[in-house]
Amino acid sequence: MFWNKAMETISAGDLEALQLKRLKWTLRQTQQVSLYQKKMKEAGITPDDIRSLDDLQKIPFTTKKDLQAGYPFGLLAVPKREIVRIHTTSGTTGKPTVVGYTRADLGNWSELIARNMVMVGLTDEDTFQNAVNYGLFTGGLGFHYGAERVGMTVVPSATGNTKRQIEMIEDFGVTAIHCTPSYAMHLAEVAESMGAELATLKTGIFGAEPWSESMRAELEKRLGLTAYDSYGLSEMYGPGVAFECRERDGLHIWHDSYLVEIIDPVTGEALGPGERGELVITPLVKEAMPLLRYRTGDVTMLMEDECPCGRGQKIARITGRSDDMLVIRGINVFPSQIEHVLLSLPEVGEQFMVYIDRVKHLDEMTIEVEMSKASFSGELQDLARVQRHVAGALHSTLGLRTTVKLVEPGALPRFEGKARRVVDRRGAI
Ligand code: DLL
Image (cartoon, rainbow, N blue to C red; front, top):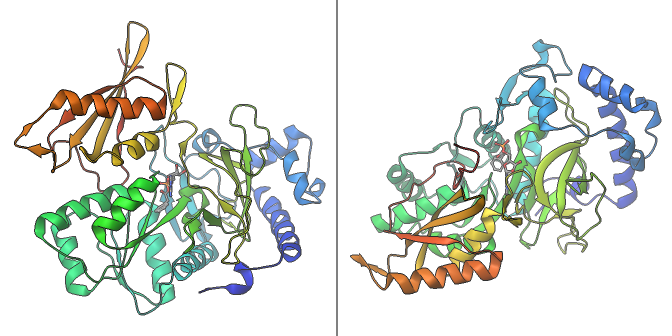
């Protein structure tokens, strides 16, 4: 099913012409912002020097630091009266980025969300529970307006009060739910403890943080739904940038609205399909806050094969952020790899925390993980064997020795929004 078939399946030739036209428009739009005027001047180029899509390479990158330096409204390309809403990034490091939207931006954004939802088979017959934060976080209002545009019955439940969320699913006959994968896992736990069957639920849209294929399998089994990965970032409106189709093998990045590149995060050099690196995006229709070659910090790769669904370019699931990648004794580790290993072991549950310390100049990684309910029977039995088994499995995937601590089911924190499972204590005194 398509929401906008002409755009979703546009031919390569027409797409190139459209992308170039929109890139030129974006360049003109950025010239209202002093940061880009300065960057282009320093690079010795003007918007007129960009005559083909390949010329994109001549344009300097924009980084999160650039955006932080413009806090709060320094990146806006339109007068304040044209801004009808603002959101901000979650701002885990330093100042958040303020993102402004014109009325046209909000329309473009809803269109992209609508495409995503229809792509996975949702229609105006569906009842959609939007179990994410409705404040400055883009996940709430972004999906809300997209789902309304499709004509779904929207339940704006937001987060929290998990028992009530489960009752809503059952009482309102909710067929589709949107939340972070960590919150979905918590919903599953609470539903199980209440004996709720969630019989009407058939579609789960999960995103805003990295999650693994094993997490998908677990969520599908426990919530009885088909789970789709949704990617986006506030700087590019929010969710809706890339989304899985029913093939669930990579995420379609909306080619008429975003130009994508993958670069080596260290050298900045372009990488080809199949090579994992940092995702760089140039949005093509953003009015209030245009961006040029924005370094997302997210690690993925361009996929080579054409998708049987007929839509365009796909990226692989995001494995993590180039800047949250943990480097432990020189080895790169993504928290999603740890999650993947733990979920494959029946002795332990899915909740874990990672602590990193520096002991006598050496990095030490400690992983706390809950025993699974099945293997926990009042006391941690045969603790040493389970511990060895978990540490062995982690070692063979990560190539790294770790200390594993087993804890009781329910002992570790649950997260309503994005999970914060890694505590890096190496910088602390
Ligand atoms: O998280 C937008 C969003 C809301 C996406 C709801 C999907 C669903 P920010 O708060 O600005 O925006 O955080 C963006 O989150 O750069 C990634 O590092 C991470 N992220 C988002 N989606 C995924 C995903 C929203 N599907 C940052 N897989 C991004 C992995 C993701 N990481």
